[in-house]
Image (cartoon, rainbow, N blue to C red; front, side, top):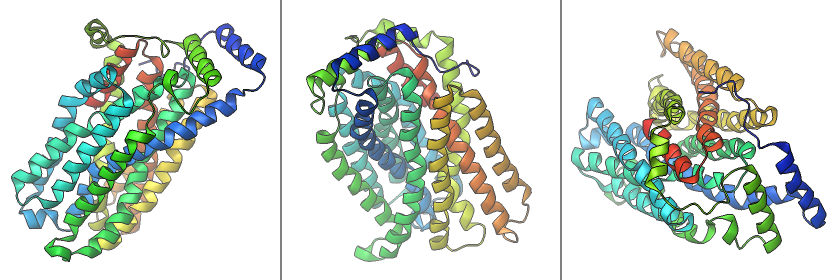
Amino acid sequence: MQMAEKTTDQPPSQLSDVSGDLEEGGDLNERTLIRKLDWRLLPAIIVLYLLSFLDRSNVANAKVEGLAEDLNISDGQYLSGLTLFFLGYVLFEIPCNIILKRTTPRFWLPTLTVTWGIVATLLGVVQSKAGFYAGRFFLGSVESGLFPGAVFYLSMWYLRKERQFRIAMFFSAAALAGAFGGILAYGIAHMDGVGGYGGWRWIFILEGLLTVVVGVAAYWFICNYPDTAKFLNPKERAFIIKRLAADGDSSDNEGFSWANVKLCLSDPKCWLYCFGFHFMSLPLYTLSLFLPTIIANLGYSSAIAQLMTIPPYAVATILTVVVAYISERVGRRAPFLIASALTASIGYCILLSNTDPTAHPAVSYVGTFFAAAGIYPTTGLVLSWPAVNVGGQTKRAVANALQISIG
């Protein structure tokens, strides 16, 4: 698993040659150029992933607002609906990244966003358990391509030593979605009865329509790769391509090959990256899909429970970015992975040890802070592994997708 490994760098001679070329240009500054990339690339994909996580996890908010009662769904059937989302997610993850490699990010990522936005909206008008099941399955199918696609996309712009922090920034949108989800659900739930629809239906409808609108706009604000980026001038494009060539394969014109897919599937390290995320997915999704219910079961009303999900997610968002930044600066992952995982374990120990949560709700609520503060930073670091360490564009694209599928 290479847990004690330092984040990989190219031999200093190659990268220093590129930096020397930049200095000779006179009017370019590498740090300024990377900030320019950050401001142009990261907000776009962060917004898309925020909407993706919002549309998959808002079912937790909808359940608190009466989804299960209106559709006559038992707890077990609700869990089956959650599972069907991941069935679709697993089946289409790798095919989606293969399509991305054979098309372009500007076409594929917005297309996925618009499609899942439509499915998310339609979940607000389902009338039966079967409709709920079908909606969750197709939502997972069309959302499956965004995260691995965006991770691969970032690997085509940044040096390996720069990817971990950017991927963590991108993943922090998952925690941010939890905070926004609580705020939106609290407000939207007050529309209960409007148009004859329950408040939980409006959560799906309005958040789904927002995704469709942003997805359509994404056709204009998602870029492709450095060699065609219009927001860069020719000199900036040439420098980015040269620094990527000195660092790895991101600037290579690698065509799609099934042989490179096989290289990924036969590499034990790729499977170890997958199982690393698998074990983090268990606490990640149980927290995101059940936090409103956990808090409501402490004795709070559904409206208050929605609002109380915001602080734990806010702490998780901040720590995900801070931990990734420090980890990248010192060039180590393992110590930060271990510390964050232990923090999450403390949170679950607190939750489990409080045998009477309604009598001591504050204790369990503190436990949710520790759980969120540990889960999200750990997951962000685990997800950066294949993007940093796997060589070959197609192999890396498949590795990113396979990691999420196994998770």
